Image (cartoon, rainbow, N blue to C red; front, side, top):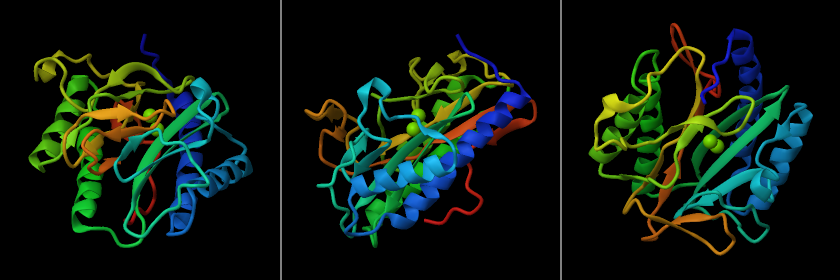
Length: 258
Ligand code: MG
Ligand code: MG
């Protein structure tokens, strides 16, 4: 069942989402060579509690940390560790959510650590752009799969591939709500077959893009998803509210620079 949010609820979700933004901005500054992903996790916890919110992922299905970190060939859901030290040239995806006043916000970015290869840079740009291509279609009365199609089409035209094993989701009083938001059109490419988008829907749209093959596997820790072929992967996510006048990106940054 899809829960629709009224204006006040969307406003509450904006507060939660802006805590997420503040924390990700702090983590972006700290994501330097020599820093461990555990250090970043502790910084995230500190910044979150200073803002009066709770990290959303810690304890979710027993996930042991507050941020998900995925480096290079890792796709999503990597567990922060003191042993994972960022190196010059890595790409680091950080996925983070909070709970505040009854609502969740959820967002992800992939950052270059120092100077990265031009191929990695291009992957980051294409993945981030694809998210915005999808968000442009998050309009009332569009089929949900217009979002999926816009993302898939842009990514595949750029020569990269869309991960199928994970999808975006509705979000609100729960971290993961209906509907699922795939980054590809599941109905034999027929994008008109998705549910109709309505004002009051809030979606976490989150393309995961691989340089090589779309397939993934899960490591023995039970969480970390990596690319099967060992190639790089990137992930960007925004929490987006659909209103009568179009969409509002609740996790938008005022100034984003790569
Ligand atoms: Mg997320
Ligand atoms: Mg999400």
